Image (cartoon, rainbow, N blue to C red):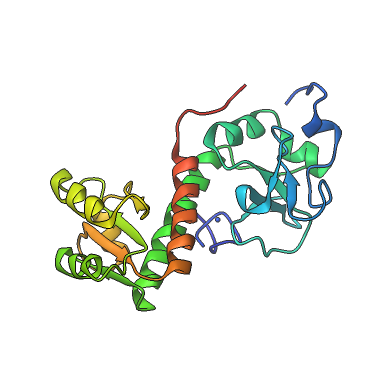
Length: 225
């Protein structure tokens, strides 16, 4: 990986094509009005928050814009691994940009890694902001006071502990459950971590969205027609 989060391919993140809505209409920022954008691979219109934005750097390099803040015309795609692979295989980024675009051949893998690191960075920031507690006892106390807005359970933690905490939180509390204990621990400044909880709703929403994005990009199979 090479540069900075939300701005490059490092951290925070051919052949003839049959005519389709994605190819026959612009897929950039001007493709739809308001909050809707068109996926360059499927032609679907979705809210901006459901898509991943890219821009083309001055040197022609395709650059993911996870935060949606980079200057330039946006190219939007549904953030699912199979759809990104299709876009790379069919050279759809260059077709949408109407110029030569340099795309990393392992773009889906890079995006998945960037999204995962972005999620872990946000978990660490939530802890430093005082809205995340970790450890079995701290999470149990937060659950007892009904403060938990989001659970984070390590994927390789004991299933019995996960079940107890999820039952205590109730069906209305979402849970991030795909992170390894070592990765969660790294985000929280320790060797491993198994249980954590977010106590502020805006942070819970943010982390839930970033976890969903990371999971979607990690899927090895998906929609690919």
